[in-house]
Image 1 (cartoon, one colour):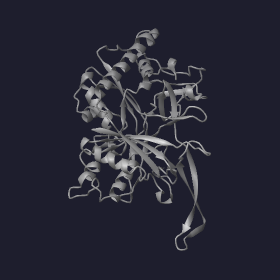
Image 2 (tube, helix red, strand yellow):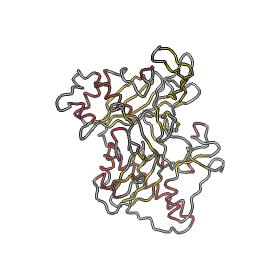
Image 3 (cartoon, one colour):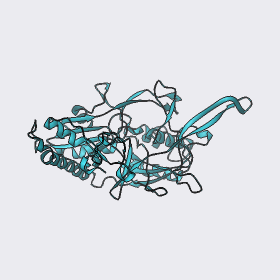
Image 4 (cartoon, helix red, strand yellow):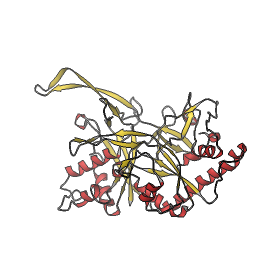
Length: 421
């Protein structure tokens, strides 16, 4: 498998709508789902079906392999990658991550210190240690001692060892209804569309908004898809209301080599995470006395952090927890020593519109991005390659539409309370 990195620059407002099941209000997402990118690419290929790549031969050709094959291309979500350094200075980030749900910040002045907040820190390791020593873990803000809560940050990046919040701007566009018979504006019909803004600033020199995404694709389809996207960088339309001038984007693509030391990287992250956990257990929490249980030196710990919403099924039923049996079945690893130590998850419901079929999609129970699962094992060498594969392909159902993207041992878990950023 190879990876094509996409930088999507918005040239007009993007109507990436999401209507909650049972509701009547259509809200706008703050990112571009992988299903939207997937649909736009498929639609453009079909429009140009006379070309070699989109040749719909008797067996479907490349199109069938790309979207309907046993190993279809995985279109990951596109997250905003432009961060504001000061009033007029913006930078484009190469890597965007989801802040874990275990992160906390000041209730009165939340946010990273570099964004004029009181700092953000993670609680996964300390909460595990508190449970082991039999204490309730109720941290306070290290800056002012105030109460803490979720910082309200979804996307973040690290630049020069400084943490920055990433977000997208939204606005409402008001439109008038058209009388189809007279082709003129209809009286008493006004409606508004919430859209993602196409620029960070207003004025003579607005800074365009861009989003970063990736396509994980089999080696035999890599060159043809990359060439197709490069040749049609201004042809794609994302989201709804494209016939009204919305959804125009420019997509730049480049091929990334993801085979370099990916297994070694997983091993290093797990060892670093485990060492930090042992350090907190022995040198910080031991002042409270004896632990309720012994921390075995023969075990290593790792976290699974959802970088996108996930659809999980176990025994034909929807679930919000990745159990040890489920993880072993997904990865094909047989490890009786595997233990699920903790789960910090929340859920929501998601539906959508299938443009190809002209029908609503089924309502799905999804696990929210940012969810964290903590595991431990006495046989870590079995897991390095399997977890590397999991990071690449994702977990759960509909991974080809951007669901289930996962990261092993997000580095933000190493940011403890005394080192809030």
